Structures are given as C-alpha cells and as structure tokens.
Image 1 (cartoon, rainbow over the protein chains, first blue to last red):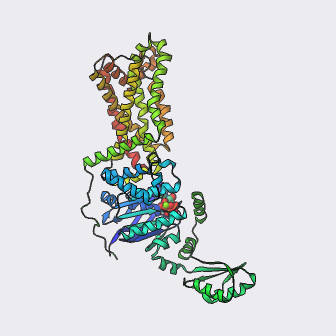
Image 2 (image 1 turned 90 degrees about the horizontal axis):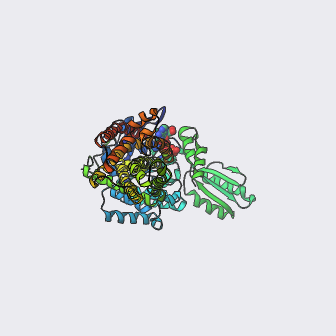
Image 3 (image 1 turned 90 degrees about the vertical axis):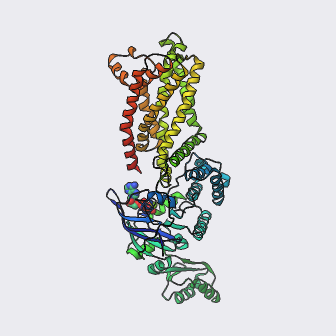
Length: 323
Length: 269
Ligand SMILES: Nc1ncnc2c1ncn2[C@@H]1O[C@H](COP(=O)(O)OP(=O)(O)OP(=O)(O)O)[C@@H](O)[C@H]1O
Ligand SMILES: [Mg+2]
C-alpha cells in the first residue's frame, strides 16, 4: 500500500497558539481523505504545510515521497490547491486567470487555451469566461478557484472546505467532480466541517481537534464509534402517536423519545427506513415526516471527546453569513 | 502501515532554470498589464494625471517663475519626469498588496515557479508603465514647448537613468506593499509621503530661491540629483556629478530595502 501523503508528528505554532500539536496522517494514493474538525482545529494549517506554504516547526511530511520542506519544488509540481478562501485575480477575466496558471506551468499557448475552455465549461463558467472575476458571485469565484487548481492536472488535490458558500447544485457538482478525479487516479485531501460531506466522499477520515488527530477510520467506522443515527417520524393524526411509538420502538429496540408529535429513536441499520414505511403503512398510519438523520459533527465530537464543539454557534453564524 | 512511499513521479525537476524563471516573470508582467484593461482608472492615473499636472504647473506657475511657458517647461519637464517616476513605482506595492490580501500570492507560491518570479514580474510590469508614462510626458512636453537641448542619445540616457532609479525605488514600494493592510493604504501612504518629498526639490523652482535651511536638504535629495542629471542630459548642463549622486542613492536604497522587503515578505507569508 502506497501513501500519497504521509506526516509524522507535524507541529506548527503561531506565537502562543498551537495550531498543529503533532499530527500524523497517512493518505493512501488514489483515495479521498477527509480532515474533519471544527473552527480552529488546524485543518487549514495542515493543508498549508502540505502545500509548502508554511514551514512546520517540528515533524515531517512527504507528498508523493517528496519532503515538503526539502523538496518543496517537486511537491509543488504534484499538487493542486484550493484554499479556504478563493484566490483568484479579480482584475482578470475567468479565462485569463486560468491562462495565467497554464502559462506559468509552462504549457503552450494553445494547450493552455484549450485546457482553460474545458475547465470553464466543466464548472459552468463558459458564459462568464470573458468577464472580470470581480464581477463574479462568491460561488462563481470558488468554482474558478477550483478550476485554477486543476489546470496543471495535479496528482494530488487539496480542497480546503471546498463547498462552503456553494449552492446545493454546485455542491453536488463538486462531489461528482471529486469522484471522477479519484477515478482518474488523483488523490484528494479534503477538509470539511460537515460529516455529511465527509460521509459522501471520503474513503478515510481523520477527525482533528485542537491540532490533534482524535480519531481515524472510514466514515462507517466513525459513525459506528460515534453511535447511532436517529429515526424521526411524525404522524398526521395525533391519535396515531401510540402506534408510531410502538413501531419505532420495535425497530430501534429502545423506547423512543416523544416530542409533541415527533417520535425519535436512535438506530444503526439504515434498512429501518423502508421497514418503518412498510409497517406504518400496514398499520394505516398517515405520516407527514419521516427522516433518518446522520449524527452531526457536534454529536461526533460529543461522543469522541465527551464535550460538544466549542465553536458550534460560531460555525453556524459563519455559514449563515456565507450563504 | 509504516511504508513511506517511493517518489510517485520520478525525475521531477529540483529547481527552475533561469530561462523558465524569465518566462514566468514575463507571464506575470503580462498579467499585471492585462489587469489595467479591467481597471481603466489605473490607466487614467498614470497617463492623464501627469499630463494634467504638467499643464497645471506650466500655465499656473510657469508665467510667474519664468519669462515664457516654453522656457519654464524646458526647466521643469525633466524634473516632472522624475517626480512622476516616483508615483508610478507605487503600483508595485499596490499590486503586490492586492495579491497578498486576495490570496493570489499564495496561489503563486503553491506553483512550481522561480521564487523570485512574482516580484520580478511586478517590477518588470512597472518598468513598462514607467516607459509608457515617460513617452507620454515627453510628447506632451514637446507639444507644449519643451525643447531638447542635447542629442537623442542623451535623452535616451536620461530615460535609462530614471528607469534604473525606478528599479531601485520599487523595492521601497515592495516593502510598503508587504506591510500595508490594504492596497488603498499603500496609495494613501504613497501620496502623502511622495508628494512632499518630490516637491521639496528643485523640480519646480531652482534651489537658490529657497531659504538656506531648506537648500541644504534640497541639495542632497535624490529627487534633486536625479532631476539635475535628467536636465543635464536633456537640456544641457552638468551631468556626471548629479548622475553619480543618483546612482549612489539607487545603490543605497537597494542595499537597505531589498533585504528589508524580502525579510518582511517572509514574515508575512
Ligand atoms: N497566521 C496565523 N497567525 C496566528 N494564528 C493563526 C494563524 N493561522 C492560524 N492560526 C491559529 O491556528 C489555529 C488553527 O487554525 P486553522 O486555520 O488551521 O483552523 P481550521 O481548522 O482551518 O479552522 P476553520 O474551520 O475556521 O477554517 C487557530 O487557533 C488559529 O487562530
Ligand atoms: Mg480553515
């Protein structure tokens, strides 16, 4: 098994703040590796070290077998980076932004133009290609930024919270893109605050908190470790609540919680969803709401650390501001 | 799973060749010039503004200071070229600051480029802007009555001297660009410091008309020295002394500001 990215005891301090307190990562070649953590966990710092933008204070990291400090130039030939904040030249058009990167990478004028057109089309920016990037919306800038990181067909792609600020359609588009890149053999390092996203994309996850990896594994393993998802059912008629309680209780094997009309119970098997529909239908219960909810990042943290994320409220505020 | 991987792609270049570095510099200079297309105000700034300035000084002060406007312009234009050069170097710092605050600099740093290419690209683009505004100012001057008193070769030498100084002074601009919080701060600082520094010189009026304490300052000012050298080369008069003085200033600025700027840049990114 080869590792595209390998870090050992990575430490980075900013003054008194320990952004990375000894991070070990092993990212297998050709997979998507998720870095999951709340605000300030150290995700961006880790990405910046691996992108040769920051020098670690201790420990070491290799990308494609090259040391990020000693062989930085080789590492830069392998990676594509999409930072947390779009880094496009606002005074250039979308087309010119991509051409700039292509020309800097030593591609010919013709190849550059062709590659730029291809990427603009792929990211739905063809119509805006000739407009200065300062006239782009936030989501369009992010997509242009993503396109820019792909101009050089990188072997490894770092995506730092790539879907923050994207509308649901663009988000799904990005997920598809990541999957197709991985199918082409690209290794992807992805940071996110959303368990759902990590669940969708990542082959393996590292949960980080306060600059330390506190859990690793596949999304399935982590979810198993962090406990159940919850099944919530709301009947149309209040009279049916007792029936719903008994059905949900049987499926979950524990006594459900009732909040108004909503009956909730933790479950582990995703097959409970169709089973619930069948049984409730058989019992003649009309339902207005039926959901199987993943544990939130907060719940993952709660079960991993025994405390909720400190900055959850802050996270929500930021999201609100960005959308 | 403690296997450390063998290099994924063998035979990656360990460094950038100087030729590639030069190509990257040219690409980045191209980019800085293309930016102007989408930011026409910048073009107005370094094209129309100096012309208005020249007109203003020629017609408002010219008559009072000198017998004719043509005669005054022949005295003042070499200095106005120098003054304008100082202002145009500000775009180096502004552009660099924009790149730093918008994250473009990080993007460039994550690419396999020569380390010096981003700065060199900015400075090269600035030199092209300098040439452009010198040509513009000289043409305007000639139309308004400026008379070259030497040869074309002398005039070219003056332009080269001004460009050499611009190259050196760009590094002051780089430092300001690295330290400033935003591009508009660079502009503000540039305007407020460059204006008095360039006016307190013999660009507009001969040194002898000033009070003694000011003369001492004006005589050693790089603006005066460079203006004198340009005047000598374009109109006639002493050349060697002021030209050497200007080059000495340029050297001193490089010695101080290159390491300072590079150090500040390293700390910021
Ligand atoms: N340039 C810097 N100077 C000082 N402190 C910094 C700097 N960059 C990061 N930090 C600190 O390091 C810690 C980790 O920051 P980092 O940006 O890596 O977190 P993150 O996991 O990416 O968070 P977010 O989800 O908000 O993006 C934080 O406490 C942050 O304040
Ligand atoms: Mg971050």
